[in-house]
Amino acid sequence: MSESNEDKGDGTRVVGAGRRPEWTQGIVNPPVWRASTILYDSVADLRANARPDTHHKLFYGRRGTPTQWSLADALTQLEPGAEATFLYPSGVAAVSAALLSVLSPGDELLLADSVYDPTRSFATGFLKRFGVATRFYDPMIGGGIADLIGERTRAIFMETPGSLTFEVQDVPAIVAAAKARGVTTLLDNTWATPLLFPAIEKGIDLSILACTKYVVGHSDVMLGSVTAAQSHWARLRDTSYALGQTASPDDAWLGSRGLRTMALRLRQHGEAALEIARWLQTRPEIARVIHPALPDCPGHALFLRDFKGPAGLFSFVLAGGGETERATLIDNLQLFGIGYSWGGFESLAIPIDPDRIRTVMPWRAEGPAIRLQIGLEDPADLIADLAQALDRVRGAS
Ligand SMILES: *Cc1c(COP(=O)(O)O)cnc(C)c1O
Image (cartoon, rainbow, N blue to C red; front, side, top):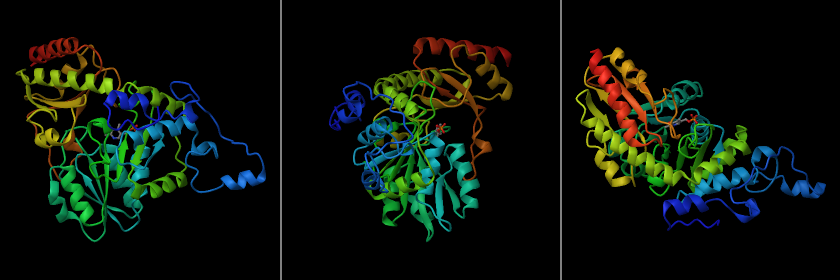
């Protein structure tokens, strides 16, 4: 069950990935191997194992056990062309380790104006103090990014679509411009996962996932990963070792358990979200639905060209109104939780205010905006719930 199944369907690939017989010992889902100390047969044996690359060898608990190796290997197999994957205790830990594996003081980072807010804070806070300058770019810049690449530019960090406002970036054009200048490309691929956007195959050097979202899929574990092209693996591994990064075997085990159903869940999240997004477009209270598979989304044509399908997270803008209308709508939803994160089985709704974050690409909207994560409830029930909450907004205004 350990061959990559690269030519097979997504369901087959996630079921088989990472399950090497020497790690599972015949158990279907890789079990939890917990360890700190590993015992050696002799001093000679201990010395023989004390090498910098202990990848896939029991060495010391921090370097993982077959439980973590199996999930990491599975994520590598889902990214055709990738060398290996490192796991982290959260998505933010994965983002920061990936950036630190590339950047040194004096370097410049190009960061999409649409990125996840904590990624932005890591750049403007920690990286600034560390001597790295950040320049934000318009996520719709495409090949025009070449004009922003300077002497000191070391890396370009993308997130497509952006996880609040869903601009779809021209990854192939940005990658081409970066490669021409020897600049490293990083992508936060949490929305699409490698199933909907195989990032390494598209030329990305470091592909990042908040596994907390779709890989885990049940809103009960924090976990992150970075999958690297061969050229970037050694630095990523050594930087992550130096930072003491390690994901717990229990969390990795839950990650593996979630992964087995990820293709099935993503399909359901994607289909239901699109159905709901299309229905929202018909409502007079709504000015605009921002979903990569719909024409109002910036980069919609790039989405059709580059992605294998939609995921379950999108936003919409109310036609006028303010904080009261928005809160009335969200507070009256019965089936949607109010909370951060996404990718789990339960639907969620949050208010979003991109204008408070943006610097180069001002956010203009007809009214307040809301982001929805569509869970695994029946879409008809979710639509009925949204309908009754929208009716209340209209009644209140
Ligand atoms: C949630 C999220 C992260 C961070 O993941 P955590 O596991 O919550 O630290 C990073 N990027 C994106 C796009 C996310 O949605």
